Length: 298
Image (cartoon, rainbow, N blue to C red; front, top):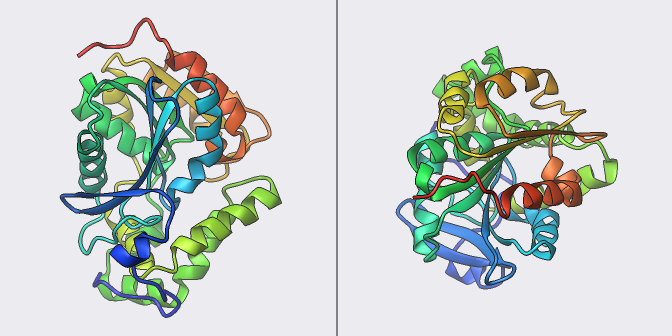
């Protein structure tokens, strides 16, 4: 699919624009990444890896809770999301893993860290852990994507002409319909849509979203779960009991493949547990990760 700018993408990400935005920015090999490093300077570090649509502000509630528990956080927006660059090219797993791999050393963060991934970000976090196991102190997975069968409409996006037409004509509606299934609470859902909509005013955003749907292997990833489980990392698994995006019906399969040390079902919670229930998720994560006697040492 050729790079395009949707009609309502009326902003451009550049150095002047970024000076007006929250957070910090660092150039990596594929483009500029938007990040926020916050919390106790002497705290152990949790790296927060977001999903298909979300900017780093998605993590605000969880980060605040972790800070009260003595944990430092690094939140960042994946390429094409938030205020990170819209890359003109493939939005495949290699791109997002490379971004995460380059980000921490670029910021001088070299000790093993607690990696937290949600939805598509769970797949990125697992792929990263497979490539860099010594860099991962613990791995936390929330509502992971990757176990559903590939739907027929997603296959149709392989057609370049059709994909471009769908993205331009129906992209905004498809994006917001997807977001509407993520969160149980209407107030939180409205806030989520507003958060994502603001970032999607920057040119190239819908292109990045649809290119990711084309390029990123979001389905039938049993082997990634299995290989991650075989690494022996301390893994924490969390899932909302009313997840309508990555249904909790996959929990038993994930538990068998991933072999987590702990599993927690968050009650009355949808797909985005770190966003919907940040205090509960933060307390579980902090209790699991800091300190953890079974972590792997480099």
